[in-house]
Amino acid sequence: MDLSFVYFWGQVTSNPLLCVAVVLTLGVIFVNGWTDCPNAIATCVTTRCIEARPAIIMSAVFNFLGVFVMSSLNATVAQTIANMVDFGTNSHDAIVALSAALLAIVIWAVLAWYFGIPTSESHALIAGLTGAAIALHGGLDGVNGREWIKVIYGLVVSVVLGFILGYIVCKLVTMAFYNVDRRKTEGIFRYGQIGAACAMSFMHGAQDGQKFMGVILMCLMLSNGTGGTEAVKMPVWIMLLCSVIMSVGTSIGGKKIIKSIGMDMVKLEKYQGFSADLAASVSLLVSSLFGIPVSTTHAKTTAIMGVGAVKRLSSVNLEVVKNLMMTWILTFPGCGIIGFITTKIFIAIF
Image (tube, rainbow, N blue to C red; front, side):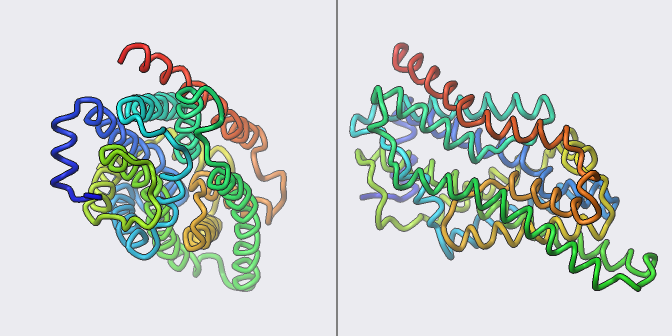
């Protein structure tokens, strides 16, 4: 099986449908970097540890490193995504369905960005691919239940672990600096939060970068006429391609989502922002090492909720939380339905 860039480029330039699928995949990676970047840097920007523009550039660099480094160490998350659905052995229909799924993800992500809602492109990806596979097969035959269940694990892990770690880390920080003059801690938490934001950006690349590498891997498999991805070593050129595109997307940023996450949900101080970023980073690291695909959006937002709950639960804006939860819940059926419809349309057209 040829997984070289030369072979892949030859297939892309000779197969218009595959070219569309690859362009849409890169578009989704770009949008992910664009819309998920604010989750990584929202707290350090809104607590005024760093200005938005240098924060975005910093996040782009660490997104790049996260994709490349973690994928070199453990590419299990990418394998899970690539094996989650089966588009069959008919290369033409499979590429049509994949293209439709990716278009659905772009539509969903752009709508979420427009309304300033930090939805999860990770779950949009999963939902879009699943909806497309159901439309292609006319049922659940194209969905790999064993791999899909990891998504449910990831949903629970990112929400529960993010909140618990956010609460614990903030509680420990509060206890450790209880008798210290607040003015003396400003510098410590300012630089600590910038470092934690770097870690958050790194882990965002490690998690979300791998998910979209899984899609590129699917394109490669389809161009080779197979859907199996077991025992496949992730090519370095895929790591580099995804890292660069995601970093470019990250460099654009998104102020609406920064406001929603960093200001509207909980009014944070520097030590709280540091606690939230550190907790979310640890949650993502644990999940990545175990090969569980989780949402960076969920990990970050629930960590902020946990931090806010240390003072009192009423300090968390429950109206914003409710809106976020509704968006998360609606992502699976919403993006899945869009993926199903776009696949039916694409199959009828192509």
